[in-house]
Length: 57
Image (cartoon, rainbow, N blue to C red; front, side, top):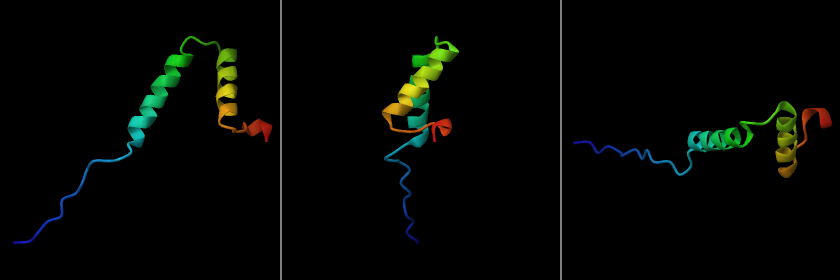
């Protein structure tokens, strides 16, 4: 009889789950914002992670 290897299906990091959680969080924070408020929100969030917008390069 051959021994078979058990494949571990548990992941330490679930990228899909994390992305869905982030998307829900952002959606909840921005759901009632106007376009200009949304632009400001994005600018503030990007400045927190020290990222430049394409037009700022």
